[in-house]
Length: 445
Image (cartoon, rainbow, N blue to C red; front, top):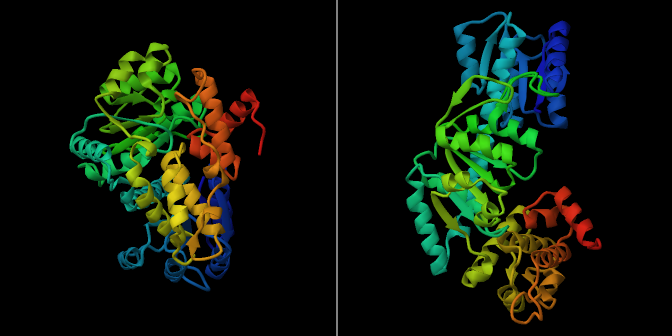
């Protein structure tokens, strides 16, 4: 759903366009003049503005200039019944996305708006990708084991081979996936993320492969999937092991043939999409338990990169913490803060079961809560100073998988301010965390 602003001094055009785009699921506001449109823009931002060119108080071109000053990220499409080459050139030079001649059909304007919103989505993903590249210090390791893994990743990036990223939650698999894309020859094409954990089977199938209108309740129009959106680029499937058996079968065919049909459709679509997949589960164990297809495992396991947990490259913990603290200070608009020697020692000694994600959350929290320019131990989460849970020789019995999971969830919940933060650290959604907490009888903090 996008936020649209319709600007036209003709009431019928304004109302009909607003009603049409609302029927497609968009949030729509309407204005009868440029002045009224600027008032609405002062109250909030819009993804796209669709404005008439010739209006009494303010022309569409004048409104375009004002929008680009106030909300440069908003796309603007100009509509006119008096099209001239000069006007079209002036509009495009001023930053308009497109210039449309009246009369037009609803299908025509829908196509133009949809194309504009897809472009905006890709631009947002590119900004996100650049932010991820700013996270490059996460990959500037002082550890020999990390350095070897990163060298292999850089070498693999130059090919189109499918890559499987393994490792515990919070180790930075998403950051590495983006970096591999940035290192690849596909860097100028889209990088598309699909989280296999957060959606139901039907919605995930539609998200991956797209659907045609009427294929299920709520499918009011044709929609391309994420695999299609990544054509020429890279798709990153996070938590691949959460694909249902039916989706594993359909995805296997895509991996083999780079082709698929949309949900409810019969037209075969072929794309050129590079696949990077990730899982925090042991896929060989999932195959042995018959929860994951063996043939799909071998198809995605062309090159496997294991991201070690922080406790296996402890030399990176303090440099990472110092960099994250600088980044957190910038984001919170605080003065630059530093770590006291005592806080540094506590950070270096802690095991960080939530890995990089837990470290980042702890530093952002400390940056906000500390009263001075120096982070002290009392600014860090209390859970860092509790006795660690021993899983090995110190235990009098061999813990079951459920016991290990319960202890880990209990620990992460204690270290998190909210259920949402704990779910993010664990790499699961809030509903799954709520069910696990109820199953294990973990009291809320």
